[in-house]
Image 1 (cartoon, helix red, strand yellow):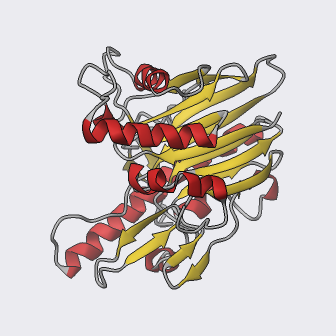
Image 2 (cartoon, helix red, strand yellow; image 1 turned 90 degrees about the horizontal axis):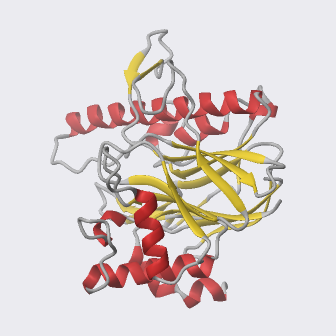
Image 3 (cartoon, helix red, strand yellow; image 1 turned 90 degrees about the vertical axis):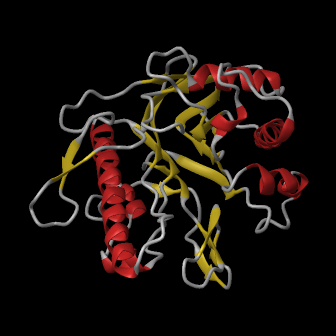
Length: 331
């Protein structure tokens, strides 16, 4: 089966809803909602993983799924769209998804693993010193199972939003270094936890897709070179176990005068104050899955793509990230 898959950090979607969970339809929030709806409608995905979606309350009185479904209905998206969410986040940004229920069935299927449960603390050695430290996912990764309508095949999907590396408080250089190393270790820990789950799935014979805002590239910055690893490379797997490797649907980024290309976001350099393009949103797939056309819907980079250019204003204004879209086969 061939599906059009996407992942999109929609930038604090919670702000687009009233406290009762109904969509805000006027003002700046209503305008941004319409822009997001235009983008998703134009992408026409069969499945879209959403990062920074609307919030879910622990008591279940308000969920990301229901808010997404109501939002999609109000803004005229695919009438077959259904929402799915997982464990509530510690914050107000959720991992969730919309999918075409006429083509696939999607369920939240968390793995119960006392040593690596996504909504519980876990132990991992991030420094290779044979000492395990305790970490916890701030936003528990969303574990889903996608089935065909006929239940002939199914694929495991993990949607993630791992630890941000950003430091926004005023600090001196020594403190900046300390916080940077701490945040990087937490980023590695979260990805090691996700990678362990991927290993378990693949050994059980499942196809696997990992998607989301990983907040990291592939050997691209000072700390990645300093620690000889990156969060994305941890997710990709061990070169000595080629059957277990995940691959990116996107080509290897190239350095340009404005940063990396392709790029899904950008940030202001703390020292030079220049904006640098970065690729931190990813779709990674396991060995038996094949992908066709894949790209970041970045209007600054995709000048020759008429479809992307037709919604250029919406893409630039709706979020501080751009979606990644890919055709994936054998799901």
